[in-house]
Image 1 (cartoon, rainbow, N blue to C red):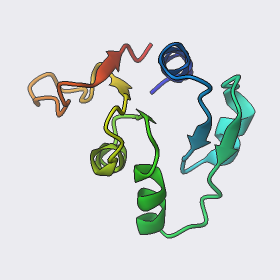
Image 2: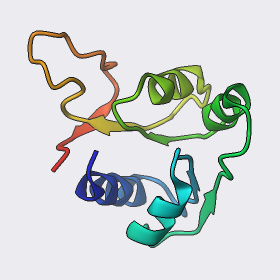
Image 3: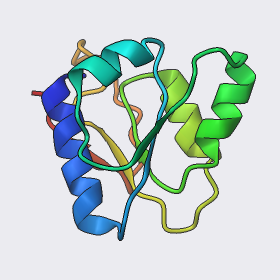
Length: 112
């Protein structure tokens, strides 16, 4: 996903959630810190936790901005907040012959 996608996804969350706080998970946290200003209070996961622990932390969020990643898909799926918002890229796979794995309630935004 592109920087534009993430900026637009954060704008969507800002419009629909009162006083959002971001918890950022990435396999390259320093790149995110250096390249994307979310304009919100943000906490960054260290990247040093075991993957199962990171998945558990992610799943405890109320809302989700996800990339086209099965890891992100499972984090939001495990999320139990009743009114959760899931923002996802409009195109999940590059191959149009593979069916997308979206859930009906997701908000789908263009990648670029």
